[in-house]
Image (cartoon, rainbow, N blue to C red; front, side):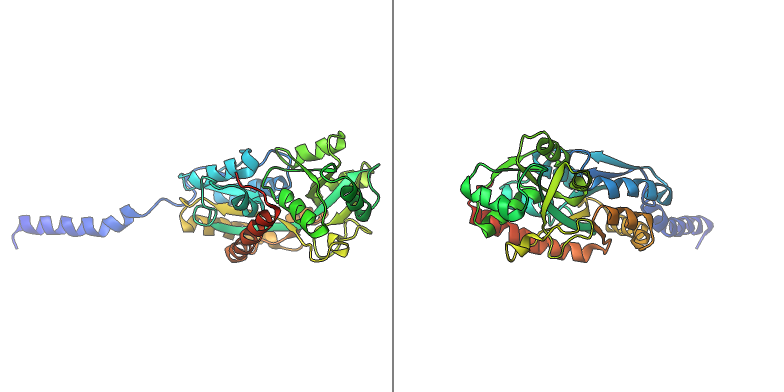
Length: 322
């Protein structure tokens, strides 16, 4: 082998050795990380999401930004995340993501294929609440609805939302007809009730609790199997309507364009927040929520069960998907 051949061979070997290093993707994150809410500001997902912004920014070494992209009962923001191709976008949503497939023929995305699960954040009860001068008990509320079919209204965070279908299930199991009034977010629905525009609300405990304590709202029942320690004396819906159980939950999903390593990194970084003596655990408990952060598998299992359940509820109710 002459000197020229040796030089060519050596250069080729060096290039071959360098190629894997050059081909490695840059460390994640390489830019700002976005947490997208598909609902108007002021909803129950805001508390853990804003906490995570402050917690994650120094750990990831990049800004973490929380944005609201509301519309179409949450579908607008969910579709935005499903289509985001920057590798740094995540969805922070309620279980509306499990109800919308039953309500819309074409979401513009597939919640199973386009939004990989990252983790459940927390779960809490929904509360059936009225103004202070409304019915004194759930039995009285349902009796009023039976006597006035379609005239007792309840506000929700949007068409196809978890609170919408929670009410649809209540109607089916209790044998009543309520008037659904959808709003663009939980806070808007709450304000409508306080203003007297609706008769009741089925909303997450976190948005009604301070008003119940202040005496401007009355909690009639909670949607979970067990009563809430934050609402002593308030019964479960199931105590009057057997078989009724609808926990409200918040979760993180990724865009399908994110690398699996990015989703795993995010989960690793927020895992320490599970500590029972931690600030987030305390904040969620104060709002009646159980902090979970248990990874993608429980969230994937819950999605499979609930999407099927809500499709059945919609079919039974005769609701025509849009």
